[in-house]
Structures are given as C-alpha cells and as structure tokens.
Image (tube, rainbow over all chains, first blue to last red; front, side, top):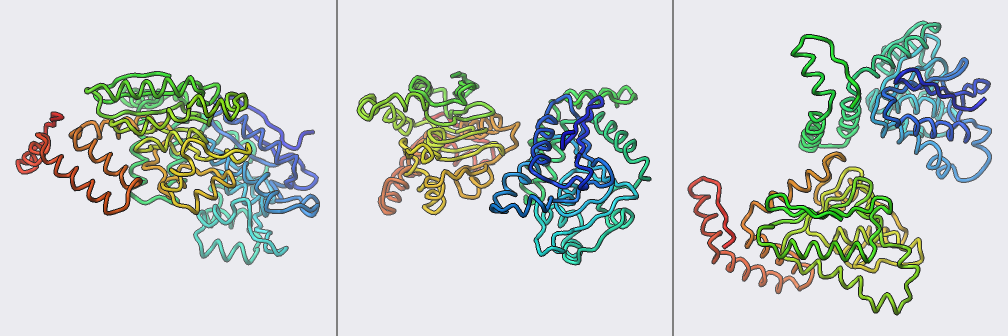
Length: 255
Length: 252
C-alpha cells in the first residue's frame, strides 16, 4: 500500500494520507506521495481536491522516529513540508480538508493550509509542538494566526489544549462537523459542489485572499482589477451571465 | 522572436520556449536588430521587450559558452552588442514572466522599466557554474538594488521572487501572472502618449544619474529641461494644462 492514495471521482481528486498504523504521521515517503498527488492535482480536469486520512486519524504530524534520525531539522522542513504547503496555496482550485480523526502538530498546520475544513465529530485538534518543546512549523503560525486571530492562536498553540470537533467549530477552525460515519460522503458532496463552480474564479479568489494578507488596500484593489479583467475573459463568466439572463442554472466548465 | 507594432508601441517577444529563451548569439542578434529597427521608426514611441510565460530568458546559451574559448568569446564581441541597447533612444519596457536569470536578468536591467509577473524569478546564478555575470550584472544589479542584496545574489546564487524584487527596487511593478504582457503594454502606451522629446530627454537624464557625479547630472538635467521647453510640445503641454484639456503632442 502506498503512503498516499489518490482517487478521482469526476472532477474531484481525493488524496488519502495512508499510514493508518501511525495515525498518518508524516515521513519522507508520505511527503513524496503528497508532492506527487498535489502535482497531479494541477491537471485542469481536476476542479476540487479533498484531503483526508485513512483509519482513525487525520494526521498526527511528524513521525518522531524519523525526526530523531539526525540531520538538520530546518533543512528537512525546507525539503519536505515547505514545497507541499506552498503547493496547496499555489493550487488554483479549492482544497478541502476532511478531518476524520486526530489532527495534531504539523498535521494541524497542514489542515490549516487547506482552503476549507470540515470535521467528523470524532476529530480532535491538538497543537502538539509545545508539548515536546518545539515551535509550530509547516506554516502553523501563519495559518492558525489568520484563522483564529493572534490572541486565541497564541493561547491555544502555547497551552497545547486538545480541542473537540465541536469546539473547533465554535472557534471557526472548521466550517462544519458531521457524524463520523457520514464524513466521507459529505466530503465527496462538498467536493462535487466545488468542482461545479467556476474554477478559474475560485482559484483567483484564493490568490486574492492570500495576497490580501500582506497587501495595502491600494495594492489589493489593483490586483482585483487585473484579475477581474482575466475573469471576464473566461467561458464561465459568459455562461454565468447568459444563464442569469435566461433564468436557468449555469453549467460551469471551469475554463 | 516576434516583432509587432501596436499603434505607437513596438513589441518584441523572444520565442525559444523549449530553451526557456536561452540567449544565443543568434537570438540576441535578432533582438538587438529588432530593437534598432523600432528605435529608428519615428512612429514608435515606446518598446516592450518580453519573453514567454515560463521565461523572460533563463540565461546565456550554455552550449555556446561551453564551446567558446576565452579568445573566441573576446573576439566575437557578442556581449558588446548588448551594450548597443543602452544607446536606443526609445524607452524600453521589459515584460518579465517566469525565469529572469543570468543574461536574462542582465537583459531586463538594460531596459528602462521592468514590469514583472507575480510569478517572475530574478537571479544571477552564474556562480553555480564557476562563472560570474558578464553582461553588466555585477554593475547594474549593484546600482539597482545596492551592494547588500546584489552581493548576496551574485555570490550565493540567491533568487528573488517578484515581490522581493519590487521591495528591493529592481522592478517597477508586479502584476497578476495573467496580465504581465498586457500591463507592460499599458505602461508602454502611457509612455507613448507623452511628448516624445521630453520622454527621450528624461530617459537620458535619468541614465546620467548612473554615469556622472551629482553636480554634472543635475547640470545635464537642467540643460535638458531648457531644451525641452524649446519644443512645440512643451508649449502645447503648458497651454493644455492652463486650458484644462488633454495635450496633443506632435513630437516637435
């Protein structure tokens, strides 16, 4: 069995972290599988991506067995986590994390790098890092700070409190919680919904939000104007307007 | 390479996509020839020099460099040909998307304004090949962004993202990756709409900032300023401003 399983259902690509015996902890093979899967997701036929875990966990973070093998940790992060985190942000289509179970450490950072998070009621969220004397990595401080705001993010990441799915929902960390048995179906449904939307406009919206993190209002308005000039040239824009005038639902093709 | 004219803007696009626009002698010869042709055309008031989406130009043609001997490289004066780009009087806007490395970065720096796609990457990675920049990189990069980052880039091969390049002052604008060519053309059209005499004098004056002591540079500027005032266009521009209407520049 491969460390990362990839399935395709219509325009939805599902990436399954597949080391269930260790709650899908990251090792080099899993990183490599993920890298390939994210590369495959660039296929224009793919219009939405779902990421989930096999077995009881979503992702327990770094596999500490491999972590202690020596070598420079910074270099290892640069070579493994960074390209995959950046690949998720660079993927111009929605990436949905379906958090099926324990989501800890770098696994939490990874889920937070995605665009949308839904969780099973069996999921739990644990910062992890501080518990063993480490700082959050894999983008955790970047994404969680933005998702929760600095005060709550700092308190959570330093207290190392375990959050239930319901608490994560109340905090806005996940957008919905479903019964454990129904998570896969709900993730597929959400994936299919997003795969039917105007993909280019979704991808550009994603870029605009990422840009807004560091841009001034002037810069943001300028990029909006440039990307709107691109959006009006898409077939999906023509279809959207035509469907609106004809009072029928639009059939977007993602181009 | 393609050359087209869009009103008063000339557009030269390097087109060796498979080689990521490696700057062979042949390609550079064609580029320089096209730029000189456009520069000589009185209808053309600004020029866009661009590459493709993946690369403005990824560097020198490594094959040519590897085959060349020091004497043959010295004799054929290919790099000297690049210097003629600085003699052009028409403003040059570099439209940079993707890789802009080595000779590509040096070529972009030969232009007057660099418009970069957010996807662009700038670097002088010659050091990785046991070489150093040979077409002005050490001089123009240091002048463009200062010693600190120029040294870092040239000695370690560090690459800059478009946003870093904007922050350091290497590029003038960063635009959406879909819009790099359109935005570069827009900048060129803006320049082309100004009075061409003032534009050329201004370009020469700014260039003097890198060639002369301050006093000589400001003296050069002042003479250019008086010279521009003698043009019909300046009369028209001042009159139009007073009359609150758009000026109609004739290039006289």
